[in-house]
Image 1: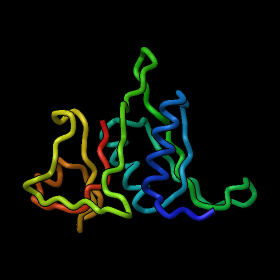
Image 2 (image 1 turned 60 degrees about the vertical axis):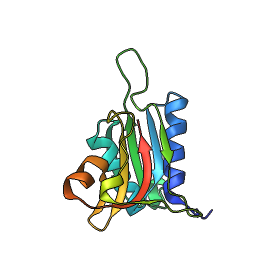
Image 3 (image 1 turned 90 degrees about the vertical axis):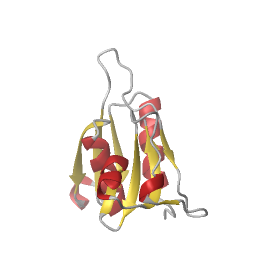
Image 4 (image 1 turned 120 degrees about the vertical axis):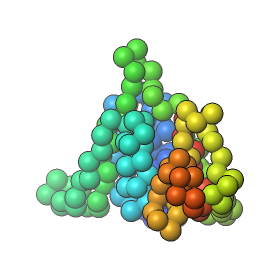
Length: 137
């Protein structure tokens, strides 16, 4: 099955896994999906991630990303919400002066720039804008 929006697909799979209290989730690999998961790992929203290479013997026919989700000691999800902002039908671009803060800087905005996919604090520091992919809190 083809996927017209791999970013929204990855975000939905992560959100649904947290809502169902799963410990792990496997998403399809894309370069922007890998960058998104790397930022989530750097911001401590997920414990770790691993790239699973294509291996027909183990019935892995496409490259995948295996994600270990993060919970508090009380069993609550660390990631409370993740929302796609820029969509294929309506792209949202922000410049460096108008990058929004998410929940008073307790969350983060993920922005695709010409320097790669970065979080909002790094984009403000480097004074570059780009496509506002999603917000996480």
